Length: 249
Image: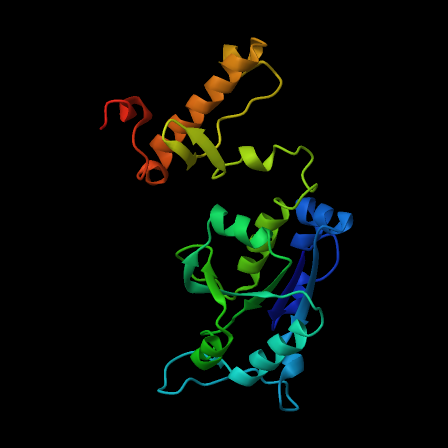
């Protein structure tokens, strides 16, 4: 997968041990060849000598708005760099909330083009012309879309074939599909434990020490459902209760 990030702050995606995408799973994905990413400075496509990409908003008000032409030219120039079709994504607090299902869909694409807005946002006319998928990582406002782009890249990198150390790792994460009596649901993960067996008076659940893999699997499944019911009941809201499924009709 190729990911292009269009930004006015490309240094946030630079090289070095301190760079977020040069650590952990994204770095492993890049080293394996499963993922490549490139940051392009929108200022390189500005039309004036000062590389100006924003201006005051019509109608007045605080802040600055990113202008149409530099964004438009940057998108078209970067898309022409690779023949693979690019799925355009604008990171914005006004977009659909990013979910695991959306990440799974995007991770299957050959190429993503992420547009990181800044300041008060981007001129609406170029958004309409480009028609990107608009995504938000939460109901809060960041200084720009760069951090949100990193979140999306990290989430997608984990799903690329061969990137994680175990082929089942991603399928057992929170929000992955889990079979239930009603079909499948996206549940939270179960609790996990490691050595020592006893720590500060707290013991590992005995079932995990039993060696009974069937019992362990059932315990983990029960924990996933009960934890989801306690912490994120909205994930189960559309599912009928498996215990009552047989009585319906």
